[in-house]
Image 1 (cartoon, rainbow, N blue to C red):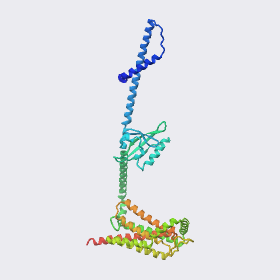
Image 2: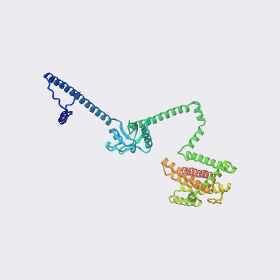
Image 3: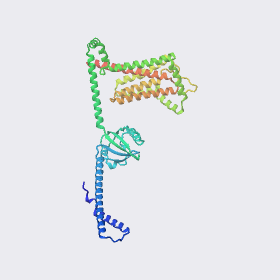
Image 4: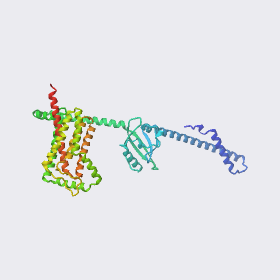
Length: 454
């Protein structure tokens, strides 16, 4: 490699000579006469020394060129690397970055300097990034983490980040790799694998069904299998809806029967009733009591009747006879059933020396909870039929259940009902609500089926 003769400008050469001459003037001169032989010897030594200096200067030039070429190579390797490189401080601020990281974050490199990398991370993966950064600066070994990045003009992407701590432990150097395509490919492979597993299972199931013994059993039990298949068909009014309604009705009735049996025979549930009622009474506060009184008054017989009248008027105005009949069958007759249950069990209400609320009727089952279950249940059923999204359907059902639980808490807190009272009322309300809705749905579709041929 030949040195570049233009590494030093003429002005720099003149300045160097001037400094050398000034340094020479400062040194004392030894005026000693020299012979011709000594003079020739001195000249020869100066000539050799000059050649040595030129050789050393040549080596320095070559070293400088090699250093500049290496620096240019490393700069090119850093800036144009396919992976993103960032240098972060303890606060997660970007101190240095390359072009790949700037493209990955969809922002100019100059604007990235000083900004926090956590500002590009989604809220769901930000805690993982904070833990990762803390582990890096604490010197703990970590395998890296996967983050979801939000970009301004591009869709979000998934990246894998790894980092090493610097020698002074004031910053870390991280590599950020885009793994969005790799994840998408992995998900597609997983879906394909599940599909193949399903096909293998179906092939095995088909071979099992085609076995001679199984096939003969299927033929002999064909009527029973057809009946079960019809009961599970979602397209028939005598299918899945009727089966689900029957199962819920049986389950709610079983729960009511179990609670009623415990109450009648004085089983351990009644001891829990007394303990829960005593705990609520001991922890009552004036503010909470006022709130509970407001909530319980909003779900009394008068309030429920007013709500039914308003909803019924709206349904009649809309000429929605199906839901009008469902409403009138469910709530009024359900409340009448609750009154009959109260007089059948004639259970006394909880008794306290200083009661928060006094009620004179029987306790079992709770009328407020039964009314809330019937009212919110029928309203939830009406709203659900107008919504197709399952997420919102589930939210509506959970909201209705939460309101019923709130009413149950008010009755126990105010000391007018036991725990078993509200449990039985909820089971009673669910059973009657299911019976009315399932029966009305079956009757309505059967009537439509008979009328449609004509």
